Image (cartoon, rainbow over the protein chains, first blue to last red):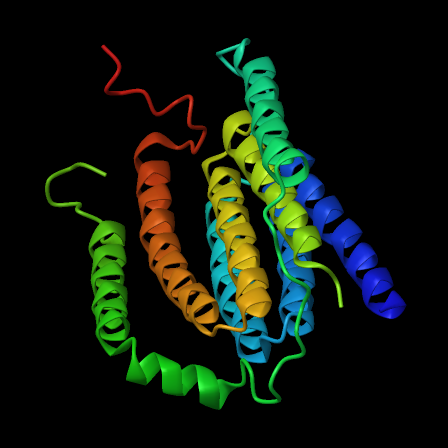
Length: 172
Length: 100
């Protein structure tokens, strides 16, 4: 009981601090590295929640593939620094007010009107293992899985078409 | 065992930080990363509820969200690179060609 809570608090601090670091670092490369730390912390949360397959998919897909793509694009463009001046001066205060409102609403739902959640039951031993997730995926969710493959194919074609230079027409 | 409410609170905080990032940053790539942070916090809530109700469906949804996020990142970064080549900037305030 107690070690779980301690681990949770430490990881939650790491996750929130890295998210704040992503938000407020001036350099986009630092933002990306902070986000990788955040994804790693969330992967450990998945392990604590009995989802080892999702945790490893998180590390490989998010912290690995997606963030490497981000870093690659940042360094390819050399556009990691931007000027801080904004053309809409009222935008930042409005953003803080809106996000504070969102947090207050969430706090109202969570603390003032808590849903009746029963205490946690111990998990069966193979819960969330790759074999059980795979069985469920290909048993009940076959059609969404196939649609996902088509979606990834379309995204790949779209990315290739978008990044192809169209020099002949003198645009882009 | 950490109560499910703690994970939901953390998920809400991470989502709010992601929304704040979308609203206050002007760098298109950082805005994209904030969107990834929001997707990730939603995934955390999914997995927490899957643990609470002992149902694998939440984890399957996280799998699909990851696939869609990968597709979104591929297309989005291609768009950002194309915009950068045409305008030499990825500041979202500079992308106002449609403004009348």
